Amino acid sequence: MKFTLSSIEQEIMNLFWNTNHMLSGADVWEYFNEIGKEHKRQTINTYLTRMSEKGLLIKKGRKYYYQYNKEQLEHLKAKMILDTLYDGSLEKFICALSSGDDLDENDIAEMTAYLDNKEH
Image (cartoon, rainbow, N blue to C red; front, top):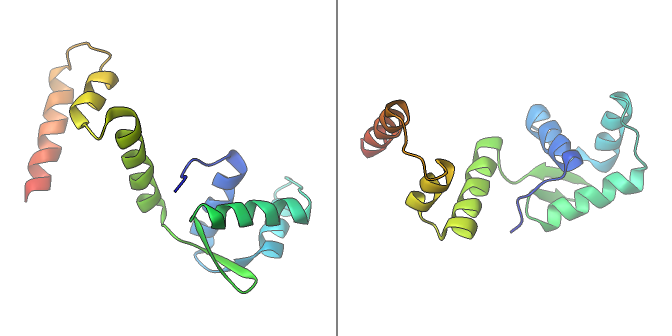
């Protein structure tokens, strides 16, 4: 499953999350026209079809709904990055994030507090 989004796809997801109900291609097209980002209807329909194929949207009849809420999608993206770039190793990720430099006390305290809270 591919979770990388173009800027238009991100705007489409934000529209679905903000409205929190099923939308047709025409609804999405009208929204973009209203905010001054005019696209052809077919272009919008192509984006919706691709997003459905990626597993981001569910299509029922002529309407679409999001598969994942914003937090779920962010979690899936982060997991994909961790698995793809760092072999699923949080340690490798943190080392890359800190660029090999030692983490400062605030970073360590923040991570420790987070992990302590996850255990309960």
